Length: 452
Image (cartoon, rainbow, N blue to C red; front, side, top):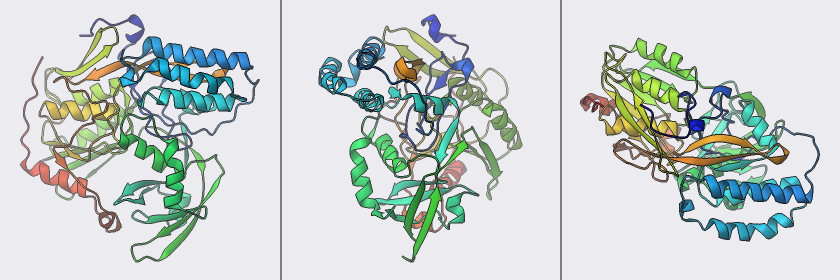
């Protein structure tokens, strides 16, 4: 049953889970469906910064009103009365003279983003009008590839099929040595001061590497990359606006196990997941890949978990600052679609809804978790609040604890079997986490989750 919570939190359980993992002009704009706009949100979002809005500049008085409004709303509504260990009043006093001296809206918006970032909370964020519009459009500015820190180097870890990057010869496992003629190591050092303010160092590192490929649509980025044999590839890539929607892909693995990858917990993803799952009803094992899945709607998490559970299982609680609780449950008595051995693969880019799903399935013994420690970004937002000038503020109003009282925010999900990915693995087209998941399934015994 639902706990006693404020009515504005009780939108039908189209609750969304939202946390910002990525910076402006980075990877994806995760939008909240209109029906869920007043429900708790946990989906890590990114701001593309691509749309330009023409309108009247705020007056100096209006800028100060916006500054005070943002600070006061956080002061009144933040889920943690101790503000994550931050002296929020001192933050106000430190940023006040900076806000007073802001000469443009853009200067103030940047300042407000840094101010709320003082909470080191991936969910609580301030967005400019342009960033808000991009989020609502469900779109992203993409370079067609992703770069991550592997063995201490900026390495290509994903290339989108059919992208400029693929056509230019960029391949997984290449090391990025220069960006627009500047050594990659130098660019990373320059960007370091701009990425603080997220829930964990892992989340901040993700922001840093995504920011390497940031920019406006139409911008050309020149990359210099090194192959495994140290020969050089020069690639010129144009940033493009692409739709960002939930994707579910599936296939049978060589050992007979099923494999399903989800990119976002967003409706109607549960329908596509269910169709994929039904193919593997009798499989001797199933791998659910949640890497690079930043979160989504709580309802989607609970629905999909129900396909794998044969009883009603507690799925944790949201806790408001007042102490009121919203209890979550998944599953119902009966036969699940799939009841066999289950492995869930996560990494540092698995956030919010993905962390909830992995943590609870791990705690109940329904699944073994493989991979790398997840983001540690799991809080709830009651609503996105439109502010003066068309900007937007999201505040973490709800904390989350797992059924066993585990706090995921700031900690993440610790895999049962950690996996390290090396540059040599990528260059050899190996996926050690997927290999480890298949090996774990051979010896994994399903335990019936505790009922409620």
